Image (cartoon, rainbow, N blue to C red):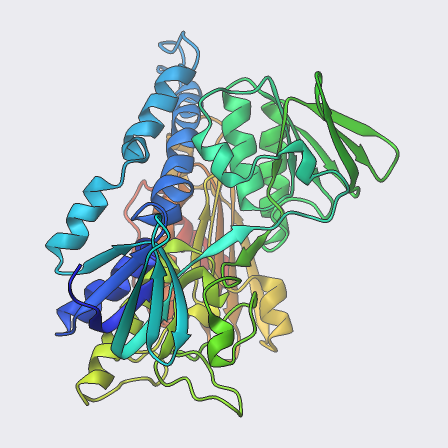
Length: 477
């Protein structure tokens, strides 16, 4: 490359980084992405897209088997090879040329290599051959390096070469058995997928399943996993790991053990901030980056970081691709505005503020049943000091849900701030509820009063009739 000076330098080229650069370029700036792996990042190749492709086939088969008329027509078993091939198509066989082409078409420069901050608005890129390119930003540097899986402190765990989510989503061969350490989203999604493929799956989740969600979410997902043949062990932790010809043995704290062909560690994430030069500008290496609502890294008393931003997982606000993209749009726009001395709208819900990160984050666990939620759980709302009322309703009692599947089982919970009479949280658990969550997100973000929601009439017979049933259970304000 010939240019070494840009308005904006972005370290990383995943989905979040691409969005930051794109918004800045649309705002009239020049931008460059620095990437040492595949352009498109974790979501495109090892997380969101491949994981959902792995899950969809088994879930669709079971959905068909739960409807009279189609269950009689479905006589075969899941084609695992075809499912893996479909997964490969969504990752473009781990070839990022399509993403590279998009970056070029968007007017964004790309430098391959490992980027390290070397000073104020300067970044050095180390290329695969050991050479270096020095880049300078006129206005801003954005860290969008994402996160890595945490390897828990279990004696021997590193020696058994455990799977991380990357190996689980990119596997070419399905193991006969799989032990999963963890009980969060990755754990239950991969348990669902691999049980669908015929693996003998064991989950070891000390605190239970989906503990950051409403209690009934973990309960309903656990029931479904057990019906798929998954063994769920709670209240215990692995104390050691070893591998031999028979597979990986995990010794547990209650004296029992689990033997599996492979073990997947899904026990949390840590920031990719250990080797990007943060110490050169007075920031602790290895920590999450603390940012304000415009995604500007907060300065300490000895340093001023009016040029350094952090978007996506690395700031630990909401480790979700869609939320990272939301941050990216705000960051790219505000960087362009500040660079051109334009008005900055950084107040709550302003164009340059990622306000939704605090209490209006939508998320979906693509288990079977799905878990879709937005805003605060009832427990989180109480801890935040809200005077709340909790309204529950069985989704299977809604006509639209009963048409979706014979014996439909699911639940909805609405959390209402009684002082303002607005919804601060909503959770759905059930088949296909992911497609219902955006209406709830609008209600939470828009702070739509309960009395106005009575005029949002759900079409009949659809699953969205749940809104009417929740409001009827709540009663007129």
